[in-house]
Amino acid sequence: DSAKIWETCTPLGIIQAACPSGYKIGSETTRDILKVTSYVIWGLAGLYLLLIACLHSRVMLAIRLNEVAAEFLAQTPTVLIVPAAQSLLAIIWVLVWALSASFLLSQVPDSYTPTTAYESYAIAYGTSDTAGKCTDSWPTNLVYKALPNDCDQTGAQAKCWKCTPPRYNLDWRFWVSLFCFLWNNNFLIAFGQTVVAGTVAYWFFTPNDQKGKNKPLATLRASNWNVWRYHTGSLAFGSFIIALVQFIRALLYYWQKQAEQQKNKCMVILLKITQCCLACFERFLK
Image (cartoon, rainbow, N blue to C red; front, side):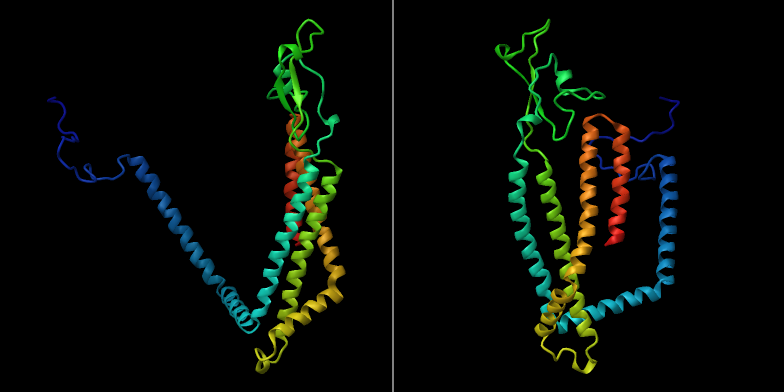
């Protein structure tokens, strides 16, 4: 073509350079976008360095706190028994509760599942905007088509679509069990935190020339006794409040699933917002 002065060619058998036209990225627009993006990233990095410089005193305080914590662990290594014991008790408790909850969840009453047969799959299972007769609640029932001999022949059209029970169900017994689970979990966490805090307090107020010379196990034992003797009620009450908030969040999630099955989008959004607010409130309580 005499009108074409030059073009990039890739003949067979010849290894071309990485950038035959001078650029790894051929589009000029893409190159400009990447250039601007790199400027923005460098600017953010500069702001981050400036922020670190402004918070230098806080960073140094955090470093000193970590140094003191490391010194405490070196002089009181027995405090590591607390998280280990917590983990062991938590594993045992979760396994026992899971066994109990599995038994409660597996009990689906006969009245939960409709026994009526329906004309079509859409009526039984529902559509994208209409709840089905079998799926209008959560946990959701299953839908199947019966054999012709098992269909309901009353009426102009045979009714062959029926409901089967779900694999699990949530009744009042499960909710009581769940609240006990949450309360025990929070109490166990709070108890361990308070024992560690008490051990740190014993160590902190010990004169510097005597730190590390006392028996570490005696300090841990004294802190454990103080928690049992003077703070059990406070820990139980505090963990009860947090467990109550967590329990309400679980109820809201249950109602959200019910609203989803009912195809109530407005209620789903409202419940999600409420759960988000409660999650923030829970973190505030903790």
